[in-house]
Each structure stands twice: as C-alpha cells, then as structure tokens.
Amino acid sequence: MDQAAVVLKRIGSELTVDRLQQDMAQSAKSAGKHEHIFMGKYRFPLALAFLIALFNQFSGINAFLYYAPRIFEEAGLGENTALLSSIGIGFTNLVFTLLGIYLIDRLGRRQLMYIGSVGYIISLGLVAAAFILEWSGIMVPVFLFVFIAAHAIGQGAVIWVFISEIFPNHLRGSGQSFGTSVHWILAWLIPSSIPVLFSWIGPGPVFAFFAFMMVLQLLFVHFMMPETKGISLEALSEKLSGTKK
Image (tube, rainbow, N blue to C red):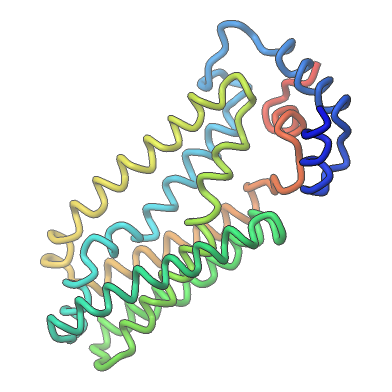
C-alpha cells in the first residue's frame, strides 16, 4: 500500500490508496458474470476501439512501411537511395515514437491525435500531389518523413494505450483483443492491395485516399474520441459504459 501511494503521488493522481481500492471493489462488484464486449452498454467503447484501429491502418502506415523502397523508386529515386531512405524512415519512426511516449501523459491522447491527424493530412496530401503532378527530386522523401513523424507522435503512440483504457477491468482483455484484431486484419488487407492499386490507378490517388481518411480521423478525434488522460480506469469505465450503480 505504501508503494502504491508513492506511485499515485508520482503520477500526480488525486486519488488516495483507500479511494482507489474502493473504486476497484465497486467496479468488480458491479461487473456481471456473463458480460461480454458486444453487449449494448459497451457499444461506445467497442466503436472507439474499432475506429481508432481502422483509422490507424487507413493512414497507409503499414502499406508505406512494407513498400517504402518501391514507393521511393516510384518517386524517381535510385535503388540505393531508396534503401538508404528506408533506413532513415526507421530512425524517424523511433525518434518520434519516443517523443510521443514522453508527451502522451503530458499533453493527453486527444492532443497527440490532433497533432498526428493534421500532420497526416498535410504530408499525405503533399505526397499525393507530388505523384499526380510529377514533382521530382527530394520532395517526396521529405513529405514521407513528415508522414512517419506524424504517425509516430500520434496514432503510433496513442492507439495501444487508448484501447487498453476504454474497456472496464473485467473486459479489458477481450476488448484489447478485439481492437488488436481489427488493426492486424487491416494491416494484412490494405498492404496486400497496394501493388495492385499502384499498377491500376497509381500512387497519387492511393495517397490522396489515405489523406481523405485522415480528414475523417480528425473529425473522429474532435467529435467522438474522449480524453482519457488523468482519469482512473474505474472512473473511465463508468463514463464510457454506464456501469456506475
């Protein structure tokens, strides 16, 4: 209990250990034995998990990471330069992911999603324009580096934390499994379609579609996504699922 009190103080929580114990006990008491995530009262957290996972993949992030050398070659870079650029993508992803981890409990989940969404829209829009208008040179790699930075500081840092927070304690495992499944099924389907789409309509329209999806993500963040920063899991469960008795 003493160690728990130290942790609560460190993270700036206003809860006491006794209050936290009471909330956890009440949460466990109010949980039905045969509840599941597809019940009506859990429709909202289920929708949040589905949408954040869907938008994560419809940013085109894994499609880009899997085919980065080909995309750079399509942009007119030589094979060696494309491979070197792919290494730079990994480094950028690492640096901005660490920055996102640092900021997520300081700025909040929604703030990072706002930053990431705007970065997505600008960078993907510019990438699409570069392919459609046949801009040459270093511009496409620069735009794609901005895209990776926007993902890492936004969706890349937020998605797994957010999905783990929005379900009540007794359903957290199945809720996370649902969100993770949506994420990785789409991470298979979307990149698998990229070679066909590039050959059929070209990279420009594909990246333009991803940019449009990020406009929808921005609307999702603004109108639907709750802020979970600084809220206990029990209080958040009551807010999102109506489990308070």
